[in-house]
Length: 353
Ligand SMILES: *[C@@H]1O[C@H](CO)[C@@H](O)[C@H](O)[C@H]1NC(C)=O
Ligand SMILES: *[C@@H]1O[C@H](CO)[C@@H](O)[C@H](O)[C@H]1NC(C)=O
Ligand SMILES: *[C@@H]1O[C@H](CO)[C@@H](O)[C@H](O)[C@H]1NC(C)=O
Image (cartoon, rainbow, N blue to C red; front, side, top):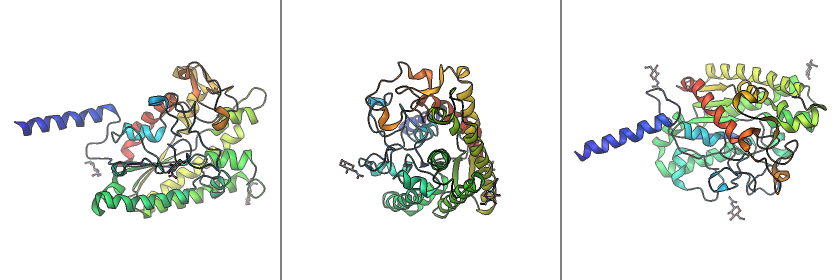
């Protein structure tokens, strides 16, 4: 009798998990979620780094996070790394690996290695004084050792092979390192520069495979020419989307998608999946009214035209964040992330199996 009750409870708990998020194919389990990348994913890895401007562990960031806590997430609430973990029924938040309060009990369900300001290009991360992709990989290797200590070797291998690793990088390379600061423009035209970051991206995916990752979701680069900051700096008097930047992004995304296809053919049992976020996000930015927003070209913090990070601190924010596509001049609101993440998972989840 009590045995039956336990089973019934388990079934109920299990089905609740499924209905709260994306529907996984019947024979697929995702024990953990991991994130690598930049400020779209970071949940606080830069908090103790006093050298970088890519930090936001102060108000008004986190204004809509439980307890209004500025955790270091570059938005008003949750970011995609959290939402993927939540939608996949793994856990509600994806903790930063460098969080000094990180508990060993968090390790088996995944942690976050992303660092705001990072790029595929090592120079991007170096210029921003943040955690480069190779340093993110080193943290991951250190993590694997700790995980073995917690759950043992066999379970560790199972977790690595079955979890989903999300990678979001490239925006800072193209918008900051190439176009805004011009540091790479003297040596490279955009065709050669996108080749350079593609090589670095591909090496990174191969390294992830070498240490045991099999299901890897790689985001396309979003339309960086449409973020409020770039519109202000390079979009002319009307603050239009900067087409030259978006063209560069599209060029890179095309190369990235081809490279991922070829990696899947060369790495046995790997399921590296190209996740198109460029098109769904561009549609939200351009047709924001269709999604219930009132403002698509300014952020909620300050004037919305240039503020991000420290420039957002001690400044008024918009009265209703739900009217806005952007939280600051670079980063979307939680509300936008909550639209994009389920959309992407529903579209691509079957490709991870
Ligand atoms: C899941 O089931 C499908 C269909 O039976 C099969 O093709 C696929 O290989 C299975 N996947 C796993 C991870 O076992
Ligand atoms: C971050 O800084 C706080 C306060 O200075 C300190 O207590 C904590 O140990 C630091 N954490 C890391 C990971 O360095
Ligand atoms: C870009 O640079 C490469 C090598 O540096 C060169 O071969 C190519 O012709 C250049 N492309 C354009 C469009 O200028």
